[in-house]
Amino acid sequence: MSLRQKVIHGTLWSAIEKWGAQLASTAVFLLLARLLGAEAFGLVALASVFLAFMQLFLDQGFAQAIIQRDKIEAAHLDTAFWTSVLMATLFVLGTVAGAGFVAKFYSEPSLAAIIRWMSLSFLFSGLSSVQSAVLQRNMQFKILAARSLVATVACGIAGMSAAYMGLGVWSLVIKEIVFGLTSAILLWSTSNWRPGFRFSSQHFRELFSFGINIVGFNFLNFFNRRADDLLIGYFLGAVALGYYSVAYRILLIMIGLLTNVTNQVALPAFSRIQKEPERMRKAFYKVTKYTSLISLPVFIGIAILAPELITVLFGEEWLPSVPIMQILAFIGIVHSAQYFMSTVLLAMNKPLWRLKIIFLTTVCNVIGFLIVVQWGIAAVAICYVTSGYLFSPLPLILVKKLIKIDIKQYLLQYSAPILSTLIMVACILGMKQVLQSWPHPYINLVAYVTGGVIAYSLGIAFLLPGLFNRIYRLALATASSPIQRKK
Image (cartoon, rainbow, N blue to C red; front, top):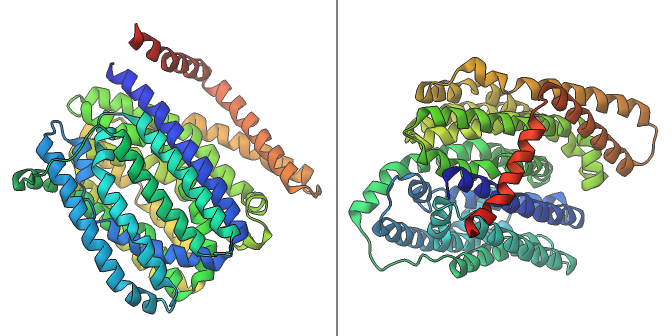
């Protein structure tokens, strides 16, 4: 199978994995939000912040090093596996011992037990990270999709059952444990790779030389993405963090749906053409265009329809999350664009460049959050968005240096989506004026979304008349490729 066919099929199965899993997990999230209060979500968010910090150092960046390397040996995989297992065991023991200090820091005694039980995720991750990396490297996204979908459904059933049984915050803990356990079991049962009993210091150093930059990036990105949670939880309490985390969760869901699908395929695909800058440029322009076609209308639509979305999906008791969702929607546009710039830097073996960018943005964000947290969660969200836009040119400059992109041609990829999004906004705002007196939030939301989609589609059809035909041909190529392989 050619690289193009692998990319098409990888994108298809990655879409099935991400969209299917997100659809299932979002449905569970909405149901649990109605069954549980903001405090329960705030407690689990606090535990997740601490555990996510520990998770940064679990695989030493070896998973991405395995995906990126031009040539990989069995000793690389064995060394990465046993390193991950050893680190996972140490982290579980350390977390069990230190959970009480974290609970005391936040003045939340019940947090200690939550952190201890959720630390089992380290063990599940350590046992399966290499299997997952091997599957991604080989573009076997069908297996990853099946794993993700089954694990998401299983943890959703467990979490909702626990919530209906009245277990409160523990339903969220059970949900996370079941997801990690199910994912690990499915990966081991479907992956052909098994570790050997060997450890090579030479192969460790080869992986570590790349992975240390990934660890550094993830370390800084943790504070860049989680400093707001830490400070809100400490200064404003679990309830305020609950409202903030719900709005932020919607942002992460949409970013995952819009970028993770192609980004998961982009790293192994870009890595294979890292010595062909012309192909890399064309691929970068293409992925930018197709991502912006979806991300721009979706995030702007979320900002406009946030009141209706919160009321319909979560209930009126979550209305304090509305302004946060509206503000954070604008950082989603930047993140969607930068995902693929970051992928280019990794594929071209420049993880240190990415590390320097995240260092600057993290310092700016943490200082900004410390200053504005006293004015509430909306001020923190505004600070986050402002910083994102101020630093957005940096990765673009580095990508231009690496693969010699033309900035004008790059920006032209956004022209049709921007104009069509403005048409969509005008349509939705007009419909709101007409339907504002209707006391039917569900019907109103469906009408706004339908009208916005139609308006945006008409704009795209006018500005990019050949787009839908290209998408149709791509779909035919995707459908016919398996038939060609069987002949």
